Amino acid sequence: MSGTALDHRLVRGYLSELDAALRGLPAARARELREQITAHLDDALGPAAGDQEVAATLSRLGSPADLAAEAGAAGGSPAPRSAPGIRRTRWRLAAVIAVPVVTAATLGALRISGEASSYAAAGRDQHLARLDAAVVTLAQDLEDERDLSAAYAARQQKGPVPPPLVRARAATDAAAGSMRADAAGVGAGYPAGAVHALDSLLAGLSHLRVIRAALSSSDEPPSLLIRLYTSTAIGPAHTFAAAVGAAAGDARLQSTATTLAALLRAENDQSVQRAIVYAALSAHPPVLAPGDLSGLQQAATDERSDLTAFNSSASPAEQKFFGNTVSGAAVDLASSQEILAEQAATTRPSAPLTRNTGLDAAVWYRDMSTTVDDTRVVAGHFVRQISSQADTLKSHATRSLLLSGAATLILLLVLLISAVLARPLRK
Image 1: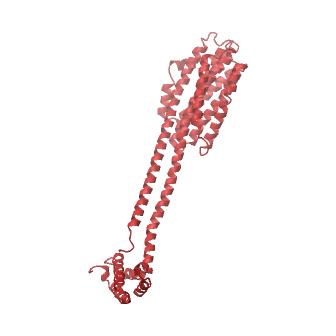
Image 2: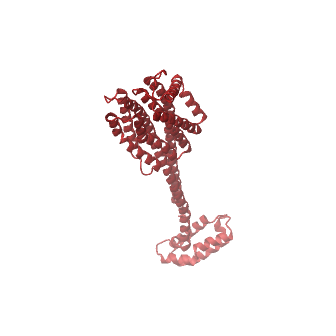
Image 3: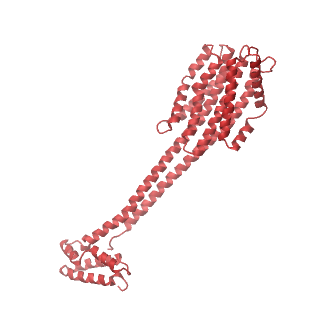
């Protein structure tokens, strides 16, 4: 045993005292106990162990006399397994193993809990993005129905609803059905602003039937119908789109949704202008009353303000995309026709708008619809961006949750395997 801890003078002295103390035990039992004590000391002490380390190890084992006495009292049980020093060693080894296991489990649980919260938030953002796309489609269909309804009311003909308006109503109903399906599950846990805006939109849609019935049974002025459609359903739809941006947990998604909300308001301003002039040109006689002229001018002012808001949040590339898309001969013609209508209504309020202007209801609706539809093309680009960004966030959150769970499980398995393989004494 040259070159081992057993050659240390303190160890040799301890073993000599142990041999003397074991003389009163049966030979086989004394030999077994001495072998176990020797093996333990060989494991616990290195060849270069100093006097203090050796003394501390021997002290933890207990005196040879105590070990021999306990071995004799235990009868058939091996003495070192019940020795106070060995019991203390076992407890300390258990503590050394347990501390990292508990620490790893706690930190892993906290990490997994955080990742699970991020995963749930990303799922809500993804749901709201999908719902936002349905709400945008619904708002655009409502704008078409509103503008056609205003012209129908201006004609003051209570006959059958014209086919274009019938188709517009069918599109609105289909979009409302899709939106309601996507809205299922939005409630607790979702941002309060988005939930409130959605509730207002759903409540407004429930009044749509009343507005349609009033169009066919009463002589409501077109301006009132425009306000009813806007305040009851279209406005809440735009409020929801803005709330989705405010509620987004990701800055890029929030910015895209904010830009879209501004563009949707500008598009609605264009549609309101389309409705006012279309109703005026469809009336008998085709005049733009002072109140309607004021509403037209206000809608144009609102459009400029909302486009300014759009440009303040859109990137240069997105601004260029808007400029290139919302352009062309029809867009320019619609702008010119609106200026002519305003001038005619200002200089000759009671004269027909069509006198010496070349204005025509069908031509105006077609050209201004080009402006509105071009703006919707740009809006669709942002809707797809929002959906893509929300899907990416959900994918990243899913991957992070799985990786955190796997890493925590692997670490715990390594620590537990280490605990199983650890041995306080060598048999």
